[in-house]
Image (cartoon, rainbow, N blue to C red; front, side, top):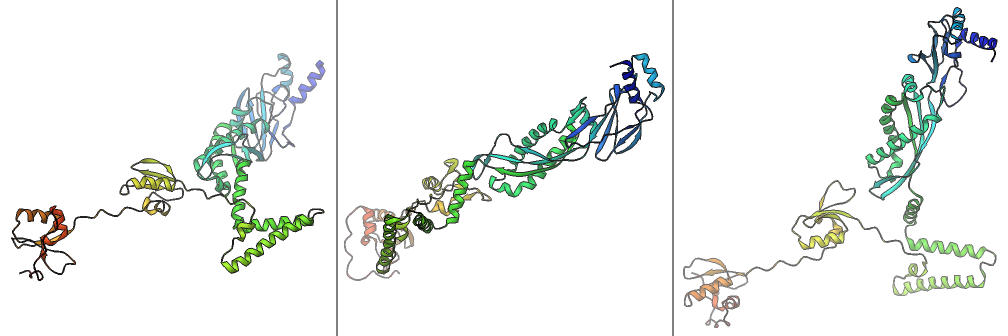
Length: 448
């Protein structure tokens, strides 16, 4: 560049009247205004439009932030003689400055997503991997922090240079928020808006403090499980909608036969014979049911596989045998060892622990309890002291042995009256001897 061209470029920069930024891009966050040799002159105009902020860096140090409006620039250089004064310094102005324009509008429709699945523990599905994606929006609310902490001295800074960092921070916070909420995966679809609001509030303060930006919106569009888990869920839903599997299988078989019959060459004598045999079997079973009771039409015609057995409910157990997670049959076996002990169980969805007696599934698995051991037979006894007492047969036998010739009368419910204890088989058996001699003629004398 020749001397005259250099002087012309320098002069134009010195007499620049208006400094402004007309942004026609969609992703520019920061733009440094191109002032020749960073020379800022007195008397110039700085125009800041809505959705912008201007940051003035004076001699390498951030000095001021301007919001929307028009400002007059003041510096130590003069618009006229400063140009000629600079010649003494080899065309390097003694005063240096930069003006950065920062876009403060909202940047919407910024996409985020999980690069890898997130592992979480679900009470219905167990350990499962989930993926999520959505959009977010943000704006620069503190241009000074944003310029100092993020942009530095870059002359042009776009959204592509910070969105990667923002996405990684958002996904990390999402994983923490979902894990702490303990919401089942199948119920997350009803919590998308609440989840997005919670995460936005959680990160806004951190973004403002570290980046000078505000997270204005966070939208969770979808949270999904791996394809193999989705297929299993679809199968369970289809089975639930099908209802009676025998009826559903018959319906599917009939549709298949009808479709095969309509295809060229798909029917024929073989298909007609098969259809006739099937109809004959149905009619025969119907007639048999009329003559001999309920038929098994569904079992004979149905060609589909039986539905899977219902899933066994698992209970959390706490009792004298320790604690763990068991089925109803296993817990019943533990209870059978000691029915009188405290066996407490809990299942998902219960408000609290329950005793095993309050769970019909466990009670139904227990074998019947043995009957109580019979106690000794008691008799009302009157001896030589004439004081009635209640004694078992063994003790009465002991008194007989102590006073063989004394009076020993007994009575219990079912006897016609008082009898001699020696004539009662239970007492005689307790005494260890043979049957007592028969009493004399006549009934027992009344108790005086």
